[in-house]
Image (cartoon, rainbow, N blue to C red; front, side, top):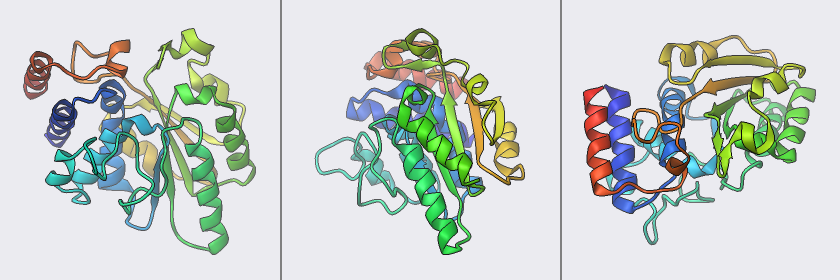
Length: 252
């Protein structure tokens, strides 16, 4: 029920603001809801590297009372705190502006090391897209995190198989990503990214070094005409599409 409410609120927010990027928001939403409602504490840090899925992050923060209804109503409008990508200031739960892909893991790894050096009991969670693993800076951050054995860093990869101009396999032959990661000194878990119990188990599994959880997700999850479609990466919903999408989610 909670997942259905959140999915509907996400679609409503994007429809009223006339904003796209809905497919990647829907693929990330389930994991983000569990991270914020069940996993991280107030002192922990979350970094959304795939900043174009800011809508899903805002809905997760709304679900735990960190954002209000009136905040969501101003999404992507003039003078809003809730920009299309996570903002640099104004929301305490968002430590960095992100969205220029390939930077989030570096920020997360540096934050995790800083926390360790301070002797603080805090955890860092970072969500990346699968497409941004084609960026060299992401691999440099991975090497850094493995070298420092950052056991206070968990990386979620929203592995929906699509990016801006096609599938990740077509663009740069990086799919499936977990095959590329197997040789690194890290804890690698591959799960169904829409299975709440699998997400919970992966997040809570013991961790002695960097943990990467590959979330095998569906772009546009829960809306049949958006699932696994490139146009769900860009296009906003028409009124007819919005009403159809809401009806589908209510029927699930």
